[in-house]
Amino acid sequence: MPSEACLPEQVAFDWSIGGLVAGVDEAGRGPLAGPVVAAAVILDPARPIEGLADSKALIEARRERLFGDIQARALCWCVAEASREEIDRLNILQATLLAMRRAVEGLATSPARVLVDGNRLPRLTMPAEAIVKGDAKVPAISAASILAKVTRDRWCQTLHARYPHYGFDRHKGYGTAEHLAALKEWGACPEHRRSFAPVAQAIALHGGGK
Image (tube, rainbow, N blue to C red; front, top):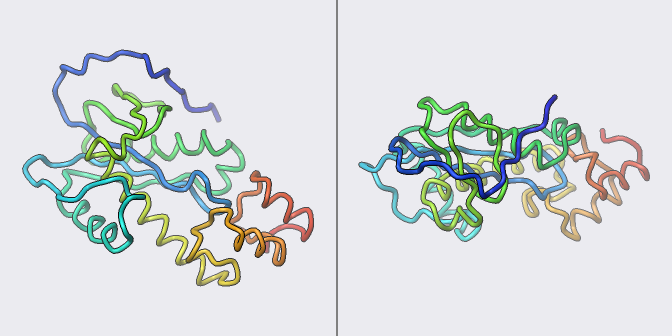
C-alpha cells in the first residue's frame, strides 16, 4: 500500500478562493493500544458553537457536551480511524494520515480546502494546509479534535469492560506506570500495538496477546 504524501509546509495555495473549509485533527497517536481516530468537520457559520477549544484543554464533561453540539450544528462531520493492525503494518504516522484522509473523504459535502492540525498532511484531492497547534487556533480543527478524542475515549471505556486489569478507563492506552506494570504482569491484549516497544517487550515475555 503506498504511503500517504507528506507535503512540505511551504507549499503555497491561493487561499483567496472561497468555499467550505474543513478542519481535521486526530486522537490516539501516542497510546500503546487501539486505533488512531481522526475527524473532519465543516462548521456552519449560521449556527456558531460556543466554547470550542483544543480538546485536551477541556474537562471531560465539557467535551461530551460539545461533542453533541458539533454533531447537531456542523454542516457536516465524519469520524474515521486506522486500526491497530494498520498502525502495525504502516507505522503510526502513515496510519494517522490514512485516518485523516478517510475522515475528509467521508464528509457528506466535499470542502474547497482543508486545514489540518500539526505539520504533516494526508494525500487529498483539494488544497490543504498544516497548522501547528491548529486545534487551539482554528474553530473547525478544535471541533475535529473534540470529536476524535471523545470517540477514542469512549472506545477505551469499551476496551476497559473487556480487559479491566489494564486500566484503559484511566490512562486511555498511554504508557503510564500503571499501564506498563499491567503489560509486564499480564502481557498484551489483542488491541495492543505490536510495533510499539513496550508491547513488543511484553509479547517477548508472555507470548502473543490473547
